[in-house]
Image 1 (cartoon, rainbow, N blue to C red):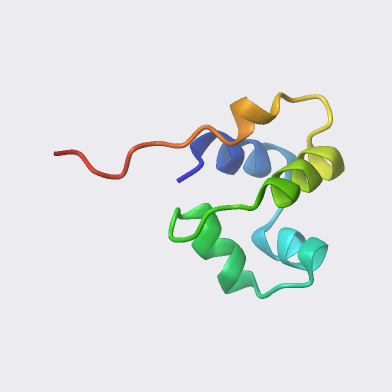
Image 2 (tube, rainbow, N blue to C red):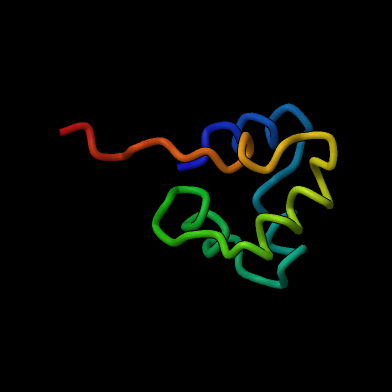
Length: 70
């Protein structure tokens, strides 16, 4: 999961469908990646940053939370 990316998307009004259009992908695929089911590719992460968050560090945006609490 990418809580920082989710929060910044919400602050700027960027929807999952916007990312899906950026990658010519399904919204469900983007949701799977944002939920941590599949990883973002490095070029996808750079493209998101360059397109929507040029003023933010990549490591901040894509910092993951640990889904396992055990």
